Figure (tube, each protein chain N blue to C red):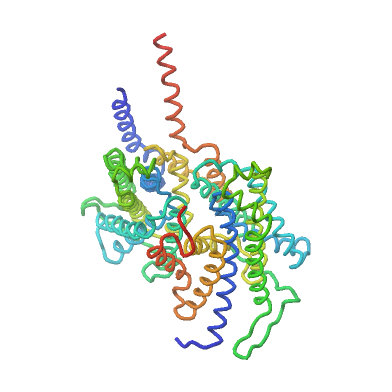
Length: 291
Length: 318
């Protein structure tokens, strides 16, 4: 097929946006895995719930995008904290597999309830007035909202990386991950820290959901589709590495965008193929190591 | 002691149930139960015996279903060959999955198999022979060994029951063979098994391929009995369903997955008519199972019998 510059740059932009969402979700996954030793399958469901909260706030309470950007992630984090305190906390001592299975059950409950209430059709969510329109770059039209999403998403990734690597909270979180008993001996309330960490990781997904709402249709199935791709991203990048999550998320999004131009049929599977190749060459992932 | 006799009684009881059941329940519903029971037992072989938590078993079930449907409908394979082709292709797929993922353990294995199964789902969505959303419809049932007309519901039921029994016996045989014992050892203590000189990844791979083949056999039988293969068969939710069946019945037991399949398929059938939300209810059972009921129905029952048995004995001697 002919590869024109506008098509290529347009798809690369879409790839960059998808990649930003992969990065945020795999970041949340990494934080929660590091702290709790749980592969949180509900991460995708909370992304969907974040988008739906934004939609509900607008439809039912008349609260627009900017309010939703703050309220929806908080709501998602609150649900996450309750789930952690009531259910997830009970299985920390068991094998990691049970965490995966428990969150799978929660995914079915959350997603199934939304499908039951809203159906599988997508609901539209408008782009806020301030971010409508775009810039004409000559070779392509660059919508303002998409620039906003990329900037916010990458900013968010950087902020997360910074706060984990360079701040008191991050230091304590890392200490609690590595040596929970010792951290406790220093007078730090580790269980509460774990709850906070879970709320944080889940809230990130909720925020990504709000960012995604004006781009994709708000649909109950949007979470399950993305979380499986994010799993592949995490396997490629290596779990537990914050920087690895960001780099592999963004670059795999770009790769997906590129594939849409070169060979569209393979665009939905290229990340999985990439995962196979990486596993055959370096089973621990590009930035990972086996514990 | 009485263990052998108990087993014999159970086996005879099982065969009687299988013979009588279609006269009490709708036979095609029972065929569905049977196919999922075989699928759940096959899954148990991977997870319960070899300790491989696969989140991608729908790929084998659905893969076997699609291949059996295609060769029966388009290539005109007879019933037995179509079902075997389904099982064989699932085995090959299992080998491919295994080679890619077997070196990663635990949750990584689960995540990789989930991702690989999603790849298979996309192939089923896009490949020409699977007909995307329509699936492969109008698959002929044909004749068993060219003699028995399978278009009759009872003939189809008893044939499926026969396939289930063969599959089930193979699984029981594997579990109790020296190979099965080595798998037990690898699951319980991989480091020790390795130090005893067992190539653990190779044993795991073989168990996984066997499990995949039997899952494919289940999928192929289901497809021929219901005369269609669809995207539902390869969807991740089906992988979740089979995990739940095995878990609910008891992942560490032989009969557990069968019980789990009976419960879940019946529940599914009941809920489909009721208009109640299926997924949240299944999800709730999943959560309750993990939190409160990790040994499953049969596992809990076995434990309870074991604990109450010595007390009874004491009571008798006293």
